Length: 371
Image (cartoon, rainbow, N blue to C red; front, side, top):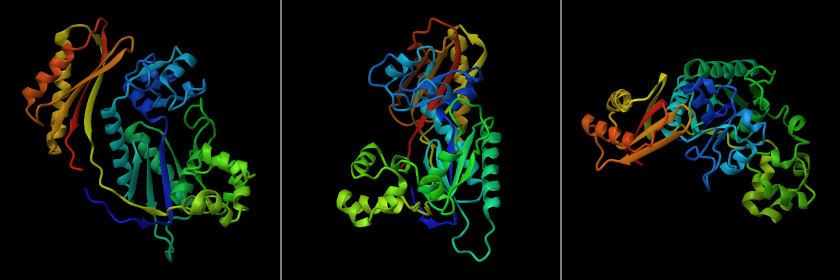
């Protein structure tokens, strides 16, 4: 996989998808909208050593946060809907969003399932096609395109470097618990030299991108509590405390500076998946096999069209009570043989101990990638 050279841009836009995994699950099961939803592990909140990957805003209102042990989340919110990670579904949804971003014609640097940067405009151009109003309008267009094409909401932070653009996204995000666009929050926010000190000067140093609790505590021990305090600290003092690398970085970061470049890397999906929520729950094994086989055929058509090779098959079953499990099997060798793959899907279905009607089935193919 080749990597393009990093390029500087006048504007960097940070696109951040809202409660991404939860939002993908709600696209598949709209009845989950407005319900506290927690995604993590295999969906069993009593299982040890599993953590929350994503919590809906309704769950966050009760103190549930990403990275929290699932057991701790369950103690706080036992009545929430707990769902397992579905990597294939998130890969597919993320890829669709990134395609929308690339369709703008501007370079895109992907940072994960739910966030990416766009580079817009050339620095120092004699004619600047994107003034403040134009770049905000462009960001709004991105938001609406992602919603229209993917069914997912996002916010956009605008600045002249990655670190400050990501912090701008924090100003754009809506407060937890409110519905999208209903609370008057901007959803698009521009943060640059003109408003940096006004908005960030009295913030705790912990609010700066990449400043964690240990660093902020070390700064506080030196009497450096706010961003203004950090700006007033001589560079040599920071280097003496943190060393040349981190000391110089803190000196630059508190002034709102950072990386102004975009590296647009080719993206290759690691898996594809398809799932279906049924209007009438399935109760017979033959119905389930037929439905899973149909999903596999649709999925295999996509994989063949992309000239990819599956090496692992996974099947997901969700019952009417939202009990969800995924079972997978690695193939003896990568294969596009329909009969072989269908036999694996059928056999995986027999491995589930299903004693309730099935509301959703999913099939995922993990694909060979050349690293």
